[in-house]
Image (cartoon, rainbow, N blue to C red; front, side):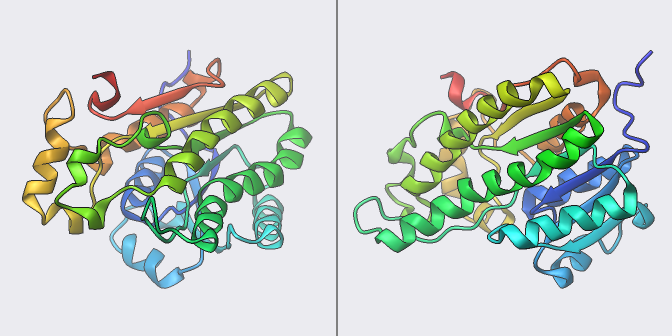
Length: 260
């Protein structure tokens, strides 16, 4: 009998694991028993995000820049040398700049695509040798509702500072195809590849703008925005053995935004 959400003994890597959503995901993985390595560039931010975590012995920071293949490869190798196994890779990190649909420069476009799509490819490519060696593993990619539907621009008319940029949605749509591609390519090796697509989960800073948050809420079926804790559970589910027969899927957590 599978203990549905027990992650005891599993080694999980998560990029971008100390950001607004990443912190809640990481905390939930640790709570359910996982040994979690947060891969990132800012150890001080990691320490601040997890200063009160109850199980610090199962949470580790490892320096890694997802913009660099050599940095990714070094991080994966170090974890494997320590743990002798990697069970799950969560691709959550991204970087971007620019948001104008008309005035974005070529450099901004390329930087955003690199940060939201190419970085995920680099991490998938880097983890494959380890998963092939142990004949199994799980990859969970993070997309966005704007990789599924176009922004409803009327929401942003009065709030251009929050406008979702075109390269972000294009990259997140690419992640969904990348997920299906590698699920098909790696399935015979007992490797699961799935995507999670968050909807409106505004940060604490964005939530200070009550009228903008209200505009987001009105576009959902539940008439509210999500909290990070409400997103974290799907990562526990996809990392656990109970989801072993799920691959190539995109699970949308958006309060019903894309259902309308």
